[in-house]
Picture (tube, protein in one colour):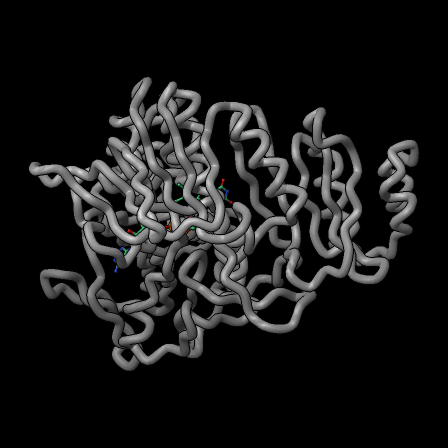
Length: 406
Ligand code: FAD
């Protein structure tokens, strides 16, 4: 019987297993994950799960009996230690070998740590897994001082969650503004104001020199490079993630800070696919390759890999997008900002309800929408259809969005 083996039982891997069945694949599906629990949704780990609004059973990707019903062999708490492309098999930790016809690598990414003295003290956390989230959640009590290193999306979401739980959050950002690499100055400034108004202290251009502990080895101070001490009860390090491409590297697959894949998620070895955060992938409307760490990208690649395995028609290419929730803000971002030439703001940041459109010539390259799902949808559609727009009309709220597409 044919067999697809999937390594990594996170968002990409679990959905790929489900999609194989939905698409009529009748061979064996083996899903192997090194976490001790069934696949779950990661986004709530920094949001609703952290503030206790939802519990663990509510963030499972599929019900417990789903895997058996669908004929998916799921093996949790099992780590794949090697891939042998020549033999067509993976090797599990105790030495068991599983052969595949097709392999999907969905090993995700690991939270980056900070290479400074004291980074192994108790009370310093990263946030990637449900186990991490349980640990962070347990310290989020009123009055607790949490230093958050990194003003990226995860850092800001944890800061918002901390504030909502009555904890005192201080965000320490190395760049001159939060989200410097991924958001517009307009959005960064808006979020800084919004967080500050909710009691989060946001500090820019600060460099972490060390973490310092008490006699019991618990972190009590974040020491900045200018000597300033930030007293704290706990630290959350949110400084990005590194692709877990070590299996692929060792197997000789082409990698470059991520497994290199084609538009259908194929690696340099035809029977091996890679999806999700572990990949560096192309985009149909851009040159180059990109590391997109988002649920929509992992799902799109899962769909494409499954279609390729089944010989089904290629799904329509998508514009990348993701979301973030902070306090009462619903952020939705589509496209990539890096090659845009100018921005147009529609709406009112003080409302707060606005969208920043990023343009290259007459084309929208990205949209950052805050509490503006209509603008987000429309921006995405304009990008999908590669429609030229008039920037003056885009900025003019008296022109209905619908007319811009016409
Ligand atoms: P993962 O979901 O990370 O799954 C990979 C799995 O593979 C893990 O379980 C890992 O332990 C396992 N694994 C690795 N190596 C091995 C091995 N050798 N053997 C066996 N198993 C292995 N995205 C959004 O779009 N919106 C959001 O709001 C958002 N919020 C987020 C909040 C947090 C706190 C985090 C951590 C991420 C968030 N993301 C968000 C990103 C999103 O969760 C990821 O893009 C997505 O989970 C990627 O799916 P994946 O399958 O590639 O990796």
